[in-house]
Length: 117
Image 1 (cartoon, one colour):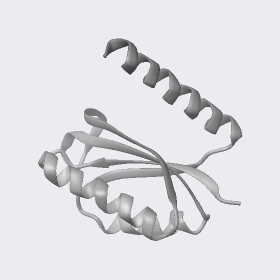
Image 2 (cartoon, one colour; image 1 turned 90 degrees about the vertical axis):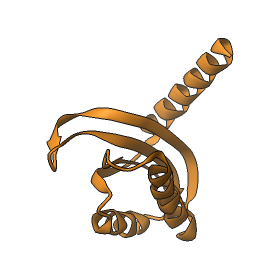
Image 3 (cartoon, one colour; image 1 turned 30 degrees about the horizontal axis):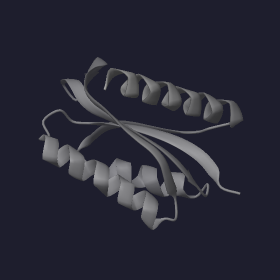
Image 4 (cartoon, helix red, strand yellow; image 1 turned 90 degrees about the horizontal axis):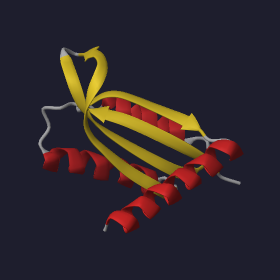
């Protein structure tokens, strides 16, 4: 049985929108090439950092929720370490409660989108 994970990474704010989208596509491809199923992808956009990282005070945030084997985390984080466009990253394993909460949160945001549209 495959585990579910959630990974968030912060890209440097000096990237253009196109470069940020290319970076996201690169990591989506890394996941799919390693047999992972991307359940949810969420672009949080440009946000202020809690503290400066490499003399930068903002960054582009992106979240992936995916399902795959446990070995993918090491491969994914190695790719993150090698990429100069990333400031920080974090990958966590989701338990059944976190998965339920995530599904509820996504359903709630979809409901808000349909009401506002």
